[in-house]
Amino acid sequence: MIVYRTRTDLAKHLKTWQDQGKTVALVPTMGALHEGHASLVRRAAQENGAVVVSIFVNPTQFNDPADLESYPRRLDKDLEMLQAMQVGVAFAPPVREMYPEEDRRTFDLGNLDKVMEGARRKGHFNGVAQIVTKLFDLVRPARAYFGQKDFQQLVIVRHLAQLYDPAIEIVPCPIIREKDGLAMSSRNILLGEEERKAAPFIHQTLRLAREKKGLMTPEEVRHWVSSRFENQPLMQLDYFEIVEDKALRPVTAWDEPVNKVGCIAVQLGKVRLIDNLNFT
Ligand code: AMP
Image (cartoon, rainbow, N blue to C red):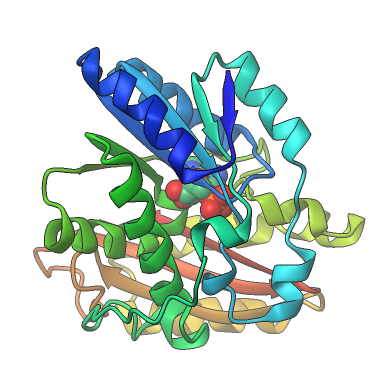
């Protein structure tokens, strides 16, 4: 595996792949890789001639400096893992390489960044849009792989790709979970022992909420979920929403002919965790 640090060096390698007629896939990550990331990489390798995995903790998508500071970084381990998976190229640039000057671009994401994560983390999705479009411009992949774990991000990236470069196919990949149901996340390693034990409650709640479908209205299920968190000393519910999967509009009746997704965000100690489940 070759690890590139600069855009110019990566671009040279991409040119050789292009000359060989290879279909190139991009898997963007922020590192501290786990099985969730690995599932994207494997799928990308199966479906394409060559894969670029980017590892970059993108500062512009962090609205909280403390979160950026504490975000796990372990590049050596990540590269070992990618090497073992026979990835051809990893791209791990320093911040100045991606942002030689301040990126002042603002993206009109309509309603998509006004709800859920976007409403709570001001500027987060604009930062995501900045880095994703920079990576798309650089790599010009045939396909880019994103996890359903970050469901709102996936919807936004799909929307961006359609506007920006419709030739790029956005491939959604299912959420990979720990045995106890907790969605894998780089942030899970920041959980204390008691917090880690409590964390599967989030996924359990999503599953139980889905079972209420038909017995309660969507609004009643929202209340039911918030009342469940009142007895949880370690966790604060940030939001629980049931939304349709295109415009992220809240679902008001189960018989609406749309795909429905239950989305949750929880503060567990210093760590903010998100998860979601198909409620269709
Ligand atoms: P991150 O490094 O957290 O920015 O994630 C990089 C990519 O991996 C994103 O497309 C995520 O949605 C995806 N991802 C993260 N965790 C998981 C997971 N548990 N299952 C599937 N995909 C994931």
